[in-house]
Structures are given as C-alpha cells and as structure tokens.
Amino acid sequence: MDEPTIPVCDYEGSRYRTEFWEGQGREYEDLTERIALRALLPPRGRRVAHLGAGFGRMTRELGGYDQVIVLDYSRTMLREAQAYLGDDPRYVFVAADIYHLPLAPGSCDAALMERVIHHMADVPAALRQIRSILAPGAAFVLEYANKRNLKAIARYWLRRQAWNPFDEEPVEFVALNFDFHPGAMARWLREAGFVTEKRRALSYFRLSLLKRAVPTRLLVALDGLLQPTGEWAPYSPSVFTLNRAAGDDPPAALDGPLFKCLNCGSPLHEDGQTVVCANGDGRWAIRDGIYDFKAPVS
Image: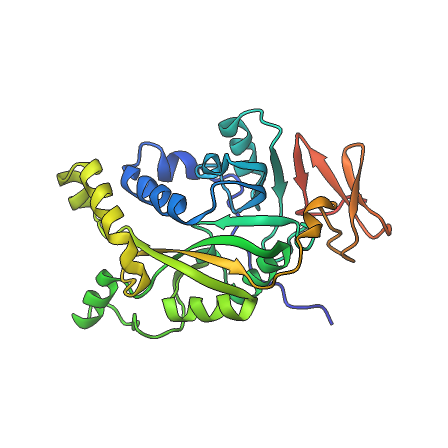
C-alpha cells in the first residue's frame, strides 16, 4: 500500500517577492529577522542548507559558508533567487520537497529555515528529514509562527477568537498555514534529534498603525532589545530557535557526494544534464542550473 501523500504548499508562479516583501512595508520584519539570524547561526562553515529559500531574501546572510544549498519547492522562486543572488559558484540551486530531501545524510554542517514551517502539515516528518541531512553537532536555525502571542491571547480572552492560544495543538487559520505552540515545537525538535540551545522572540511590534507612526529604526532597535525574552517568555508572533543535531560522530559525509537517490538512498553522480543513481534507481534533470527533484526523468 502506498504511503499517504502529505500536502505541500507550492509557490510556483507566485509573486511573493513583489507582492509580500518589496515595497510592501515589511522593512521592520526583514531587519528584525536578520538580527535574530545573526545572533544564532554560526557565521562560518562548510555547507549550509537554506531550506525554503524562496527568492533568496535571507540567503546572503550565509556568505561565510563555503557552499550554500538554495532549496525550494518552487522552480519560479529558484529562478528569482538565481537572478537575485547573482553568479556565485558557492550557490547550488535545488528544487525539492522538504519531506523528501535529496541531500545525502550528514552532508551539511548548518541549516536555516525561516517562514516555511508554518506551511507544514506534518512538522515531525519535516524535522526528521532535516535532521537526516545534518552532521552531528550541526546548527539548525528554525523560525516558526507562534500561536501563543500577545494579540492571540487578548483576542481569546475578549472572546473574539474561538481557538485557544494555550492549547498545544497547531491552528490552521487558512489552508496550509499553521501557527504553533512553543511547547509543541520544542517537543517535536527534541523527538527529531535536536537539542535547542537558544530561543529568540521577535516582531512584537508587527502592527500596521505602529509601523506607520514610529520610525522603523526605533522599532527594530526595541525589538532587538526584547528578542532575548524568548528564552523564558516567547509571546511574540515569530520565534527563532538555534538547535544542534544530537550526536558527536565525525562529520565525514561533508566530504562525500551531496545528493542521494530519492528511491534507494544511493549516491548520485552527474551525467550531462542529469543526476543519476549509482544503482540505476532514478534520474533527475539539471535545468538552467537548477537540480530538479520535483519529478524524475525517464
């Protein structure tokens, strides 16, 4: 019997860059997220996976790594990322599903995933996949949307929303858009093989009226001062965490093949404009500089 398919949010054809970020009054959110990332992710390393990278908004923050895997499910987003990031051989563009990552076990010594997991219907499955590609001791910075935020608590107490922000069950407010309780996320990370070291709370001032009335620089500075409160009281709309892949074995896989076969797990090698399984169990295309694992080729 085939395993049930987990629904995947696909931004193919989306105008996410121009309709959500550029010129849309989200400079405050962008800058506060950069503060959190710089405070949590080790600045240098060998190979980092930017999972759900989109058009590459945060990818340039990973400039201290020898190789950056720019991975997204949307080919459209990856083509925009190619244009946005420029021609740098350190970037490897990969179209793939988080639930079926084509990266070899232990092949990365760091990973970043921001503004992505809120689209995940099965968070534990996604976290297990991410843990599998990380070498022991690798850093994983994860951002998630927090259901236990101050606005949601106030609305619940005023009986203006039905769902309970203190309940650990995720809330799906629109299709494939979830908010998560910090307790549930902490448990899922632990069960997937991560040790959470730090937690930052941010975007406390994510209110349109406030962002119009107060200079962005001031809001960002105040947010930066409040972010460490995430260690004991994350009541913000967004939470960033630094997690370590459990274990202490040598990261030998960092020197091995980057890609694995999605069917049998064997290493892949390049053959012209394809990557091919060493056991002959699959072949995937390389199209315009993008390793495309969304569907195999015959």
